[in-house]
Length: 385
Image (cartoon, rainbow, N blue to C red; front, side, top):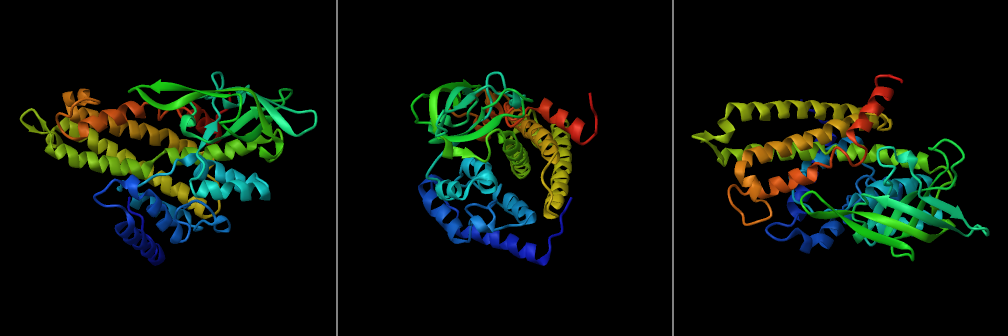
């Protein structure tokens, strides 16, 4: 499917391309130019925080402009910012935080001065997040909460400065009630972070323990007991982002280029009928997914929220990521087994296996596929137990 942009949108697309040509580091480590890159984005008029509204220093882009930005940048190696502060927490502070909290936290989030992590999942409350048991008790004088409990699969907690955390302040009602949204420093007394090594021996997730951690009451976002409302909005935007459709399009295009230089028996891999069919099927389904994203974008352009569409995009988008990773490993053949050691075979074989192993979690984090199917059944198809 081809989307026909307006004259103004085509001009913006060209502006993005020209900006990337001028400012993206070329022929050098992108991390050495990280500060210059983000400053150039900021000087452009809020491009460093593309999803922020104008009143908070963002560019105020339309959904179509966001789509163009994602599509144009997906093919480039760029210095990245972890999404926890800028993409996930900031909109919650903007919408539900006090003026004082906005002035206190948003500037440091924008300037990458504070790294954040997300305290949601627990050992007994992953897919069923509302079953969380981490407890926060308000002190007798009302000055602070005392937090006890544990969070798990906490991405980059070992590199974070602060955590935004769902806690239980009341257990008397429905499990979605009595949840309170707190912010606090992970260096606070009583916080212990232990690493979890995932498939491929990678350390990016952790288990975090809270033992009588004191959190000032001014670090509570919104009302006590209303945190589930705030968390739901955050999850909808997170799930839409996790679909990664533009990145999958770029990854599939890259795979098609790579296999042109790989042999399968007496012929090139790209000419193998079975593999060619798999590539074609993946591309057809990916374009259909892109069409669904464009439909969702059209609704957003009219002022709608992601809603249940975010579950559809997350479910199919993460499955597509895994599909492309599997095809990459298949294309690398026996050389895919050589990952982590001396390079052998096609250049993409090592990184292909690393992405494959890491990507096994894509259909779990951010709400597992089974949960997304349940949301779709209830909200889209109207199926009730």
